[in-house]
Length: 152
Ligand code: DQA
Image 1: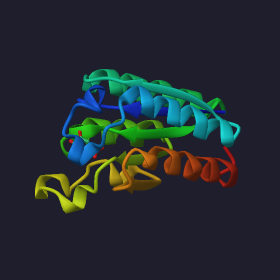
Image 2: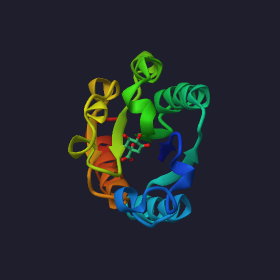
Image 3: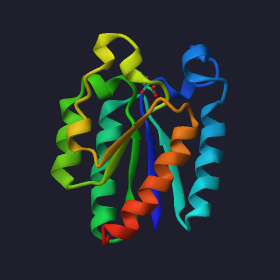
């Protein structure tokens, strides 16, 4: 099965963007890390990034269909700042019944209060944050577990 790893706005800037918060790895490094982690769990990584909320919505709808067809284990979603603003992303996840693990590189609860609320957590199977880019590998392990025990 496939794990879709979706990255939202500004994550294309990883490596150069606020390295004290997000580290020095680039998005391409994260893609490679995800591919290796998926391989360990006999899963296939489909790794994407968009700065556009509507594109992320389209990908979530597409993922819902792929999950229903038994092709997709679920989505690991780092929605960036849309996490804190987007009712539309939450509605889409709920609407298609998608298995999502919400992910953040940083510990959002140790940062500004506007990062403490997430519209996505209520519709996520679980949330991974604060472990840097290694969190992607941890989330893939969690997704493999969910996928095995969840029947899909
Ligand atoms: C982030 C945390 C968000 O608050 C922020 O807007 C991001 C990245 C993270 O990975 O830590 O863009 O999702």
